[in-house]
Image (cartoon, rainbow, N blue to C red; front, top):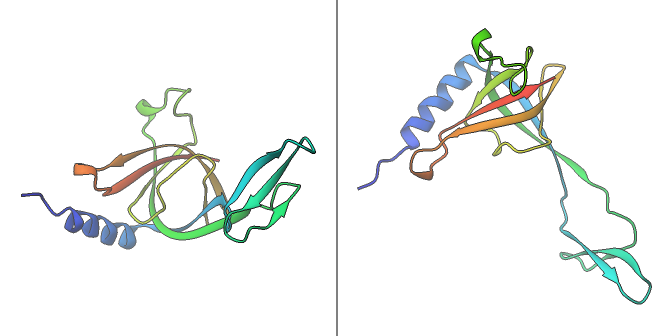
Amino acid sequence: MSYNYNNIKNTALNLIKKFGVDVTVSRIGSNEKWIKKFNTINLEYYWENVTTGEIVTSPPDETIIETPATVVITNYQTEEIDGTRIIHGDKRLLSTNVPVPKANDVYTIGTTKYRYVDHDTISPSNFDVLYIIQVRI
């Protein structure tokens, strides 16, 4: 019999919504799927859209996908700051409702933009309950 971790995740989400702040997660993405190919006759690269079949000879525009979420933002304790992995000014974000964190994500809180550095996931039995995200200005 497996444990239902939804209750724990919902409790975390309710607490984060109560004590957290709004954030916008920005991620470079594309609404279309493009595959880079090489034309052996013309000896040049081209991109083919697998959805529409469109072919272009220059890289397609990337779009920024923005997702609203809620996070609790905390500072690192002095003893956690090692000057290498964690530096002075880094912040820790706690959330359950952000997209799975990844490199190049930008977290905008108010007018301040933080960039993704690293993250840990609390994931019992492969069920993501909480993301702990390290960000830096």
